Structure formats: C-alpha cells, structure tokens
Image (cartoon, rainbow over all chains, first blue to last red):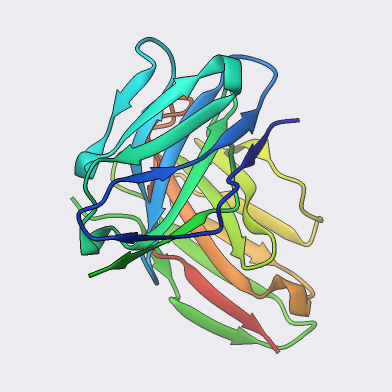
Length: 113
Length: 113
C-alpha cells in the first residue's frame, strides 16, 4: 500500500529565509508525486507535480521539488519565503490510474517578519 | 472560468441524521473526487467518479456514498451520521486523465452534534 510521511508538523521560518519541507513516500511502482498548499479555510492548490523525466521540478510561486528515488523522497524548497507563504503544505502520491491521491499529514509553515 | 463550487459551505447535523453535499466541477471536467479532511486522520480519499461511474474508492464504510450526474455535478451522501464524521469535505475536479491536475473547492464543513 502506498503511504506518505511528512516528518515535520510545524516549521517556523523568517521572511526572506529559505524553506525546505520534507516528504518521504512508499509506493511499489513509479510514483506520481505532488505538492499542494492549503490556506486557512480554503481548498488545496497544486504547487507542482512529478511523473517522470528531470528530477528537479519547478512549480508555481517560486517553489521547486527534487525527486530522489534512492531516498524515496520528494522534498519541496523555496529560496526566499514571503509572508504569504504561510499555509499548510501537503505531499501526495498518486496511483497509475485515476485520481486517487494518498496525502501526507501536512506541514504547517509559519513565517516570522 | 468558474472554479469548483461546493454547497453548502457549512452544515450542522445531529447523530443519526443523513446529509447530502453537492459539488459542481469546472466546466468541461468529467472527473470528480471527494476527500475527507480531519485534524486526526488528515486528508483521506473517499471516491472518484468519472463520466457517472465510480472509478476509484477509498476505505470508508458503506454509509458514505456518492453519485455523478450527466452534467458531471456530483453529490456525496452520508447516512446515519456519527460524531466522527465531523470534517471538512473537499471536492476536486479534473479533466479525467489519470493524475491530471486536481482543482479543489473550498469544501463543506460538516459538524455532527
């Protein structure tokens, strides 16, 4: 069965500093990997996704993620965070068919001024 | 282009009652997925409908059911509500191709008293 682990429940970062969110997955085949962001009271917005090819994926809002098969990881990074990046971030893995996603527990990011 | 619309936004029910939630996908989208979000269990997949047929199903009891109409609008029904059904229910739509970008609605917040 597929699973996703986000080891950090909360992360506090200063505005302008870099951010890295960790994600480890367990999946029997080639994974379809996603990062979503959720602002309070809102639905989820896709930041980026990885299916195949280049292991460094660029997304929206200046985010990028790197797929490392040997470590079963798909960590999200941003070089310089803005106050508007404060939100909850979810890593997810998808099946080969359909749109059934398994989500990690999420990481809540707080941005200090 | 209008986004994914979920109604109602908030709902309060008592144990034993049943509830129906509605989701209108983005125009042209044929796939609708439902997720339950709770503080304890996180985001969990309920089911996915594609062209009026259930394509994927999560591990929820039979009290949770859904359907999709010919215009792609979807409804989710929960019968015999339990306190543990209190959650944010999120609907997501997509074109239907596997692992295509999901567009999420803002959700229906269900409280069971």
